[in-house]
Length: 98
Image (cartoon, rainbow, N blue to C red; front, side, top):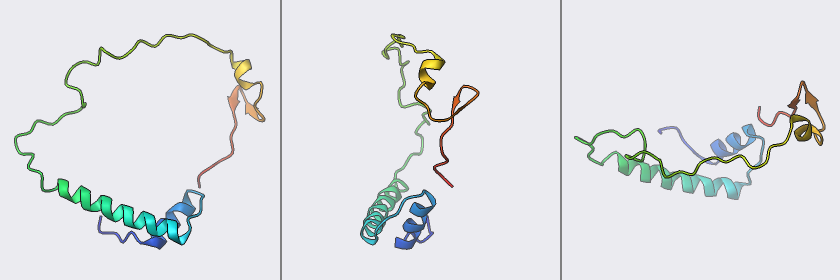
C-alpha cells in the first residue's frame, strides 16, 4: 500500500476502465481511499493469536436458504429474438474494457 494514490492515479485508473473523473471526483476518491487505508491499517493491530481461521462466515450449515424453484423458462430462440448481433446462439456484445 505504499504506492502513491493521488488524483492522477485515480484519473488514469478511471480512464483505463473507460470513464472520466473530474478533478473534484478524483480528489473525493483520494480522500475516501485514504480513510479506507487508515481503517484497514487498524486491523494490523488486532491480536488474532489463537483464533481459528474461518473459511465461511457461517459456522452452521446454510440449510435455511430457500430452494431454487424454476417458475418460468424461455427458449434460446426467445432469449435471442431481440438481439442485434448473435453468433452460434450466443449474444455478441461490444468490448467495454481495454
